[in-house]
Each structure stands twice: as structure tokens, then as C-alpha cells.
Image 1 (tube, helix red, strand yellow):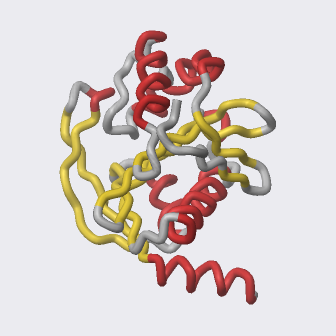
Image 2 (cartoon, one colour):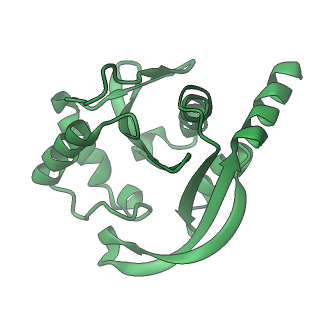
Length: 188
């Protein structure tokens, strides 16, 4: 159960970002059990077992606060991915993933936009940061299309790949840049 008085349910044209539910377990395990998904995530194991899925859902529900939110991404009433935002000192770090069958349909761009709107408007944050493994060009396109700018590079371990460190590109977007981008979308 979330410690917030009301969990921030977010909606876009096609998606609902909502709190995780126990009934998400089967799809969660199927999606994160796919190495093509888990190899791009730093903290998920491979193989991803039912016990891992139960832990994922329990942790999401137990740790949801105003400053630390894990959303389930839902398309047409079905769980299809996850999105996490963690705040610290007026900034947030975000991470996300989709089941492979949902790749290439613009869904993550849609989810990212509503999360950024929430973080910059409702939470009044100043900057949102993330990192992406260099071998994940699709995620890089999502971020740069949304206005994220590269701020550096680092090495980051990937649990699904035996905690080997891989090159990661670090990016961020400021509130002002996001508002400028969204205002230009409205005016064009």
C-alpha cells in the first residue's frame, strides 16, 4: 500500500500509469524474463523468476511515496511495462522498460511525457536525470526526442549480465527545457 494519500495515476492518450497489482505478476515475469528486456536494465536479474516478480511488486507497493514512485504501465487494460521515479533535492532520476511486444509503437515516449509533466508540474522539480546503456539506441532516441541532453558517461553494472559493467550515457532535462518543448508542441 502506498504511503501517499493518493497514488498519482497518470493518463495519456493510450496509457494508464497506475500502481502495481498482484495480478500483474504473470506478465511482469514474462516481460522481465525476456533477456532482450532485462539486458538493458541495471537492477533486474536474469532469469527473472516468479519470486523475483513477487518481490518487485511487494517492493513497489511498500516503497511508493510522494518522492519514490513505481508505476505499472497499462495499455488497453493490460500491464505492459514499468516506470520508476525517485526524487532527491529537487531532482528526480527515472528508469523505465516495456515488454518486447510493445517496442517501436511510441508507447514509452507517451509514458515519459506524462511522467515528466507530473514531475515538473505536480512535484515542481527542476531537473530529471537518467542513464541508458550505450547499446540501447531505442531508449536513447526516446530520451533525445523528449529533449534530454547528454551530461556525461559512466560505467554501470547490469545484474542480468552477471553484474558486468557497461558504458552508460547519462542524460538530463530541465523543467525550463521541458516546458519550452511542450509549449512549442502546443503552438505548432
